[in-house]
Length: 397
Image (cartoon, rainbow, N blue to C red; front, side, top):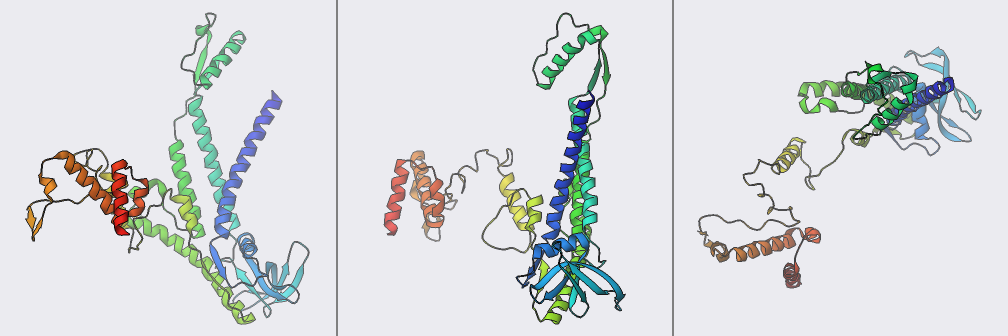
């Protein structure tokens, strides 16, 4: 029995560690991928440079007579200049490489204005996130097993078999005649369901971590009721954190370029990682650019909502419209019958429903062929309609 408990403890500890590492690695990857360096010498590894800034809060840039330009970990000490920057530095690597440097032949690159690392804060957020993950698991499991049963030893095996049936989601569970229901004691342990609230809190903490790193984010849980002021306040924290880290790197670039006559620059990477993390689907409304997201959002809201039951007066109203069957809609005509010497096609006023339907279908094919021919690949056309389409193609040639 003790060995089984030890095994369960080990499994739980393993799961805790895996969950923590999952969050730690995800946040670390975001942190070290935020900035894009331009014109770095080939001998400088951008990933390693950013890892040093992440874990140590600084790294040192210098030129080695044999290896070329390097960006390595460093230890600092000795006298300070007027801006409290240490003038004595030692660059080192895990392979045993060391180099004594000073302010005349090296530049310290800092992670932010405070000269602190990001690793400790990522560790803090990772611990909070994995604790909430485990709490969600415990709460969800409590909904699955809401009772403790006390019974005689003679009934223990019977109760185990009944519970296995319960675990297997059996629609019916049958007890034997020998089951003494009066001798059973049931202790209700049903915990209130709070997993949804815990998940909301986890999302909030995740967004706090992104804000700390300077990564744009939206409070996903309540984004549908966020007001402008909330968005602005959130972006204020993002911009401040981003500015501190970016400007610390840019200042180092200026010093490096002046000292070594290089042209290194750094900028904030266009962050598609946030899209991957938050957005579950991207939709384009066309090959053009608008000044904001409001108009595309209105177009999508209207295009989707009109397909819901009750929005249109006739449920089938949208079936003959453009794109529904990979065809553009046929031309529409209203009164008067003659406008600017142009008459409504005679077939539409003939009252012959089959001919009208045939005319509408052919005009749809014709318009699609002229304006969006690629849609015809997926259009459901019968034999006569395909012959009509072939005639259209021949007329163009």
